[in-house]
Image 1: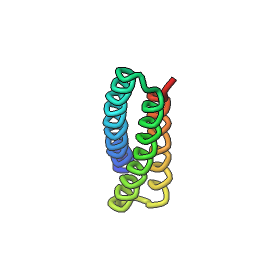
Image 2 (image 1 turned 90 degrees about the vertical axis):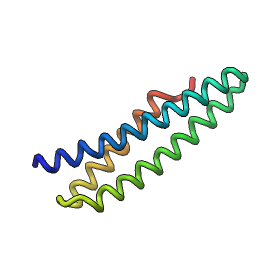
Image 3 (image 1 turned 60 degrees about the horizontal axis):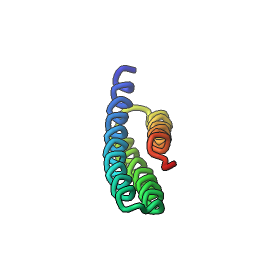
Length: 97
């Protein structure tokens, strides 16, 4: 059980890092769009980052699942749930007003 939890914790670190990277890049895009006075640029950047993050999380999850040594179905369900959680977190933190 401890090994299983450690594997989930490792994936959480991977997912959090991706969210942090995209949030930082998006923040820079927001600042640029604000400086230029272009609202659509911020919306486009947000949706672009959200789509790319979703694909990256899915790819990393699939790679991660392939390398685990525990019950594949159980870890797959948990990891995919974490992907959704971190994608929702990104959306909640960064959604343009």
